[in-house]
Image 1 (cartoon, one colour):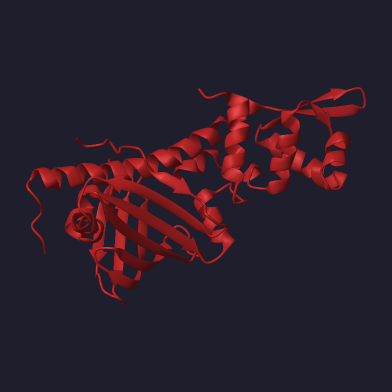
Image 2 (image 1 turned 90 degrees about the vertical axis):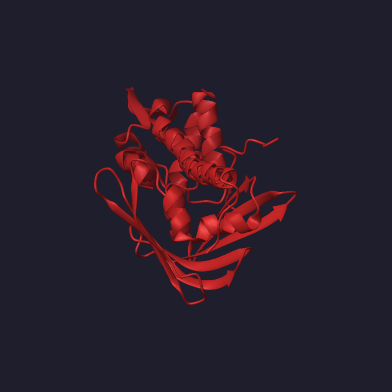
Length: 161
Length: 115
């Protein structure tokens, strides 16, 4: 039996500077680690059609760098890049995170894997150096709980349709 | 993120804690500026400025009643926000769904050959 994990990511804002997303996969930890950190795998799932992944380089060692670039349908290029700070296959990598559209934002990304009973939990954590950075991630969200707060407002205004 | 660009005005308008507080107050019904000033600790000129911003993006409507102006929510304009929150979540899950599909495909092929 394979539990359906589709669409089940848990997104949380544990404090003012972080965004954490976790998701379970029915796959061994070593395979999930490879799929996250090897370009030949990342290029297979990294972009949503019609977006295309045009660049994917990963030098997986402390001090090594990575860069992923995407072209979206209107021709805009998005790039995520950084330098590895910690590399511990198959459980953890920590790296700096730069997004070309937000040049003023500094962040550190942590990817952690944990396997139990043949299910691997992937936890992606982005920690911004200041709250302005995290607010870019959530745009209108100026407070830790304002996503929830807005959710409540929206629910009361619009119903659950 | 980029998805929000066409509706960024609405996002901007609710990106301010004071404006969200005003929206919260208007949830309970139509109010004059004075009633809003009485319930949040901001001077009237600032409240009026916030109401103007909210009015400009269509989140708040106003009407004259005698010498007063009454403000109320235009909730249909919040729909882009709700859509954004759900699309943000959906975008993340779409990406992870693709990763999962790929993992399933790799495992069906009988494990992966490494390095």
